[in-house]
Amino acid sequence: MSDPTQAEATASPGSTFAFLDHALWRQFLGADNPADMARAWLALQCRFIDGATSGVVVIGEPDVGPFAPLAYWPGEDAHDPALAEAAERAMTERKAVVQGDAEQAGSDACVAQPFFVEDRLCGVVAVSVSGPPAEMRRVIRQLQWGNGWLEAMWRRQEHAEDYI
Image (cartoon, rainbow, N blue to C red):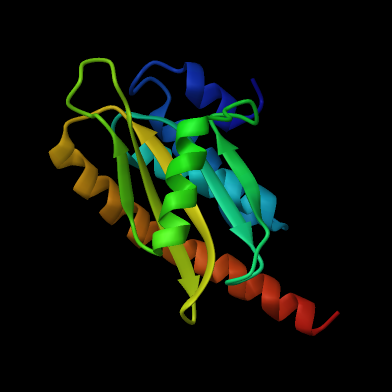
C-alpha cells in the first residue's frame, strides 16, 4: 500500500499513526493541485476526528456553483448519500449541520461545515462520525479550524490563475 490514505483505512489504531501522519502531512504540504491537497487535508481531518468513517470535500464557483466533490475519504469509492445530503443542507443553510442519530447504537451522524472566502460560499466538508451527540460539537470545531487550510488552498488557486 503506497498511498497513506489507503493504508490508513486498514491500519490498526496506533500501529502506524506517526508514519501515516508524517506521510499525509508531506502529501498535503507538497500537493501541487487542489484535488491532491484536498485529499490529504481530508485524510488528516478524519485522523483528528475520533470515530470518523467517511468524508467528502465539495467545492464550486463561489456562491454560484455548480458544486461538486473534489475529494473523498477513505477513497474515491466512499460515496455516501447521507454525506451528500448533509453537505447540501449545510450549503443551503450556510452553517454547520449535524444529521442522523448518533445516540442509536451502530448509527453514524453526518457533520457538515461550509467554508467561505470573503463571505462567499466556496464549498463544504462533510464527515460521517460514530460517537455521542456531545462529540459532534468537537467535530464541528475541528472542521471550522481546518477550513482555514481550504480557504488558503482557494486563495492560492485564485492567485495562481491571476498570473496565467
